[in-house]
Image (cartoon, rainbow, N blue to C red; front, side, top):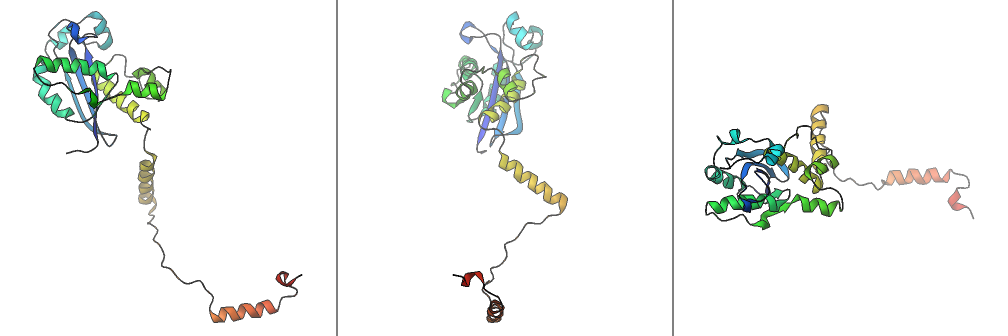
Length: 228
């Protein structure tokens, strides 16, 4: 069992409200272990079994023709749920994505994902930067995260961006880890060895050293400690 595992999750949909018949068309997840991307991801497109409204197509560019050949949610549900497991879910505007995911699970008579598992990065951003824009684009610009590849939304693409934003919101990279890595690299390059503690040795003068000191003091004229 992997400890300290989190899943950054995003979806793309046909619209804004699953209660109006809108469906998921893409799911993207990025695994973090100890706040570091592990390299493991989950990604799938989903056939929504309905037409794509033009306003949604303009957001993500997923057409009816493309989605027609993709699997239904029922075919990907097991793999998706196995990937997320019981890990906390890092989501930007969690109510939206969980609402759609739970609507899909309900259609399959499967239990919903508990909202208590979600960490909402919109809420985090608004607490950290009151009054400032909290969209994913705005946060990427704030943290100087590259947005050059985000002409259209994409679930996996946005999950990767959100993972970077989330790590900044919780404090950014751990400097200590970088210092440790850099120190190790420096030792390899320069041949440095680790310093070792020296054994304790006495520092009191020997009898011979004390006699020599007293003889030296007697040669001094009007030493300051004898004045007054």
